[in-house]
Image (cartoon, rainbow, N blue to C red; front, side, top):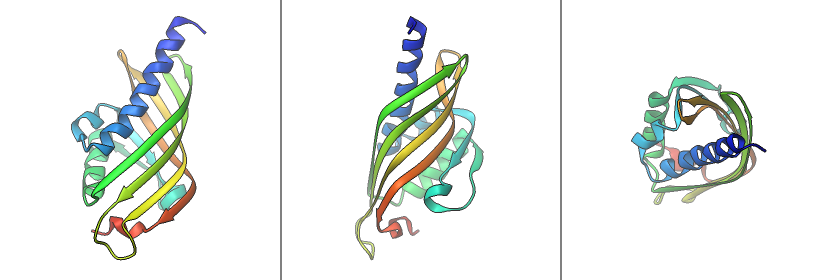
Length: 148
């Protein structure tokens, strides 16, 4: 592996870690910087519906609204494996997610485990996420924690 390959691998792991870190800390402004100008978000395997293509800031605003009702979240992302081809990359990672909201009927936790699949693009010196696909292996708990 060449030095640039190692640099790219680390940078991709970093942006994926930042993505989860900023979501859990509700650092919405920093989260925008992890995304390309346009991002495809696909949670269809978890919750049905259709994949969406949105400007990065609009996707972050959606998460700000949807996750803002929660009392806390924790996403543990590990085992990132990336393949780089020039200025594009694909990556996969294991993920465990806990979403908590107190005082809702049916229990305060909804949690799941699975994988994330990413597509990324190099933007200057930084990698940015252009596609995120969630692939659950298991889901437990009360999805009612998201009720508005």
